[in-house]
Amino acid sequence: MIDQLLNYDTELFLYLNNLGAETWDGLWLIITDKISSIPLYALLLFLLYKKFGGKSLLIIAVVVALMITFTDQISNVFKHGFERQRPCGNASIIDQMRFIAVRCGKYGFFSGHASNSMAVAVFAGLMLKSFYKYLIFILLFWSFIVAYSRIYVGVHYPLDIFCGMAFGAFSGGLFYKLSTYLQYRILKKN
Image (cartoon, rainbow, N blue to C red; front, side, top):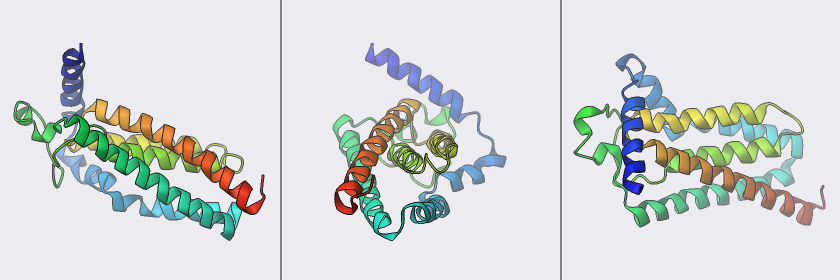
């Protein structure tokens, strides 16, 4: 059963990866680059500061740093625990796919990009939901685009992405609860 699931995952990867075109490669390389999300992170920090103030922002920033470290390190634990080769490292499909990423990496299950971006999307969306009710949908869409970019450039299978996003959503919700608890306990805010 697992082998069949992995075969379906490979087939879906090849389909989605081959939808790409040279014309769009540059855009997807920018999207997949972690640095390209810095302006969004800066905007989110500004919105959080504007709505919650400096003391709360300090707590939020510490919680976000812990959240990103958590999601990133847990994805590495899974990668080294499962040792699932990335598509770009799979000799049996390399001639059937488009690989445009700068580097390949060794293991891919599950995607750190997908888990980190989804954790930020859920966390920030929940923190700011009472001020900007549609922001969470915009952030979830952004997270999906970042996650898809990993398939486009050839470094992750769809299952890597799906599991990364699921773990990121869980982590974002968990750290949102932690942040609200800490703000309440430290600053006596509701």
